[in-house]
Image (cartoon, rainbow, N blue to C red; front, side):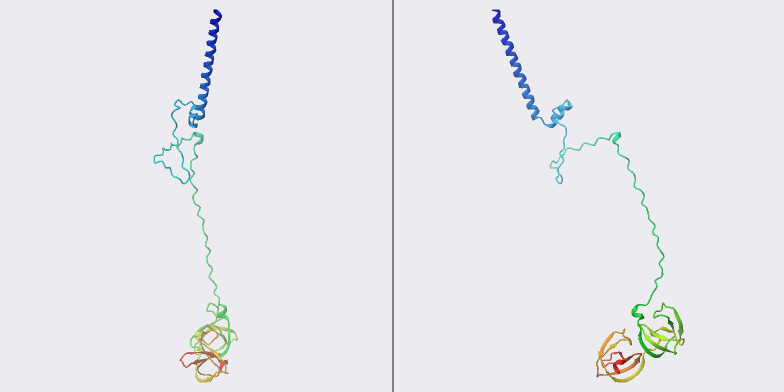
Length: 250
């Protein structure tokens, strides 16, 4: 009788242990399932020991570059935490004052004016002409050159050449100098008819620097109304006056 009672008691103990094992196994399976399905935020709260695991922290999802947030009522940004004493920003240093560099201007030297090659080129000539006004004679065919002497109206000068604006003259001392063309009666009047021995251009001035006005041809007759150095002043049938080289009449 005692043996049957102890056997039943032993069986009840075994069944109780089996029931406890099944309960523990079910609890372990449930905890594993919760761990796998928990969000990172829930795990973070569990690790920090938050007293309110069911309350999630405020989050803000930043939009991708070039996109605007579609939510009209976005959560306001939290103010940045005040930096600690070790993280205090350094005070702003004002920029240094601008440095003004002084510019030293050198005094400009007076420009030296010289005659161009065209003005100094001399066309040979030979004539004796009368001065119509007082004038200075210069060492070079430019008014900025040195004065040689002063000549006076109604006197005669020997011409040895001509430039664009000056006559080369030979003084009594034998020195050659330059006299402005405007001081001399460059053209002496004449009234003759000549026959051309060659074609020739008709120029606006008695020098090869004159502008070409027309052209006359060999065998034609021309009316000469003046003589000027190596040129003859002619008047054409249409009334135009100009200069042709004397070589075209020889």
